[in-house]
Length: 330
Image 1 (cartoon, rainbow, N blue to C red):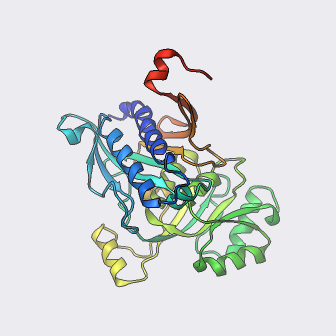
Image 2: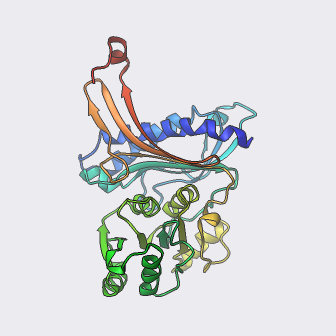
Image 3: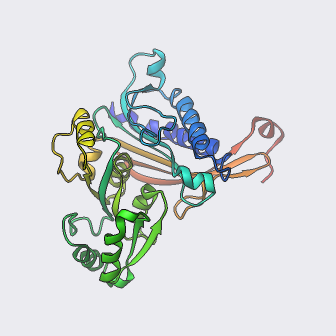
């Protein structure tokens, strides 16, 4: 069945494109839940046309009580009764950065990762400590090492000074000590309000201007980042933050038994066949946002695969049917 995987990449690209276009219509309107809702519905509708027996293993919105593609939901043509289709596990975030979209800020994306059944960790919706680096640094850092040591190792691997490094950190009160340690070591920080998944992808792309991501963010986004790392050659080190009995019980219910385990991309996204697809909703350094014009819109996306190992940046013009009949004006 693995030979069929490359054929699914264009279909998954259309899934994230349509979700991005749908929520881009709501960009800047200040209603994050409405933006999330239209992204979910667009993604669900397109997923149900894909020739797979699909299952959602990472949904979105549980923590925010937003509309969900819920964990365990069956999607694809198999959900409509078609038999003999490939079994696929899917992790989604129809709108990564709901606040970013609602306010018109950069880096909101629609994103999906897929693997064969059992190939993506069923992660609880809790925080995860994260350290994300590119391919050159991945064997030289340790999530339990002092921040200054990791920064020195990253700089050494990149043949640069620590003062040249740019580290992305979510702008949260819980990161106060981390921010101080990074600055004391001499590195520069890019604080972001939301969207650590986009930053994680950037850490593994040469020339993105991001050298590492540090701090805690959502565990579901960690699984999506791991799928991207499997395709890009970078690495994520993560540990679930289970600081209450309720969170531990939720993790246990999802099959997590080692509460102190440090996960790598091969643990979070263990499948042999990985597809990762994302489309920009608002402007970003890797992908432009959705741009509307009279006859349609233009999207900017990335599609990655582990087999064959490739990364494609795709610019697509979507033409309304009536414009297609009379001819597109560029």
